[in-house]
Length: 117
Image (cartoon, rainbow, N blue to C red; front, side, top):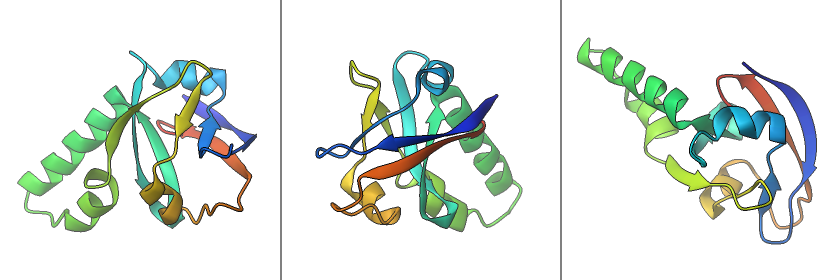
């Protein structure tokens, strides 16, 4: 289970360190999924947790539920990324815009939240 609140800096290249205790739980083979989150945050999922999220969306869609809003938020912008050798991730420009992280933002919080960061 992921939990904890960590204040971290964002470097000049838009990289953020994910704390080791969270990183070790989501990294698996070194890759994770990054996507938009509600309330204009960015979410990180282990490949397994993202597969479970995707499967639940597909299950709802198969039952006739309109999943387009959820797909727009979690599926369309999602991509696989890797940690660098220092445990950092690069925040893509669209994710920075979504989370209102401009060039002047130097600090952020990394929050563990059950199955995602």
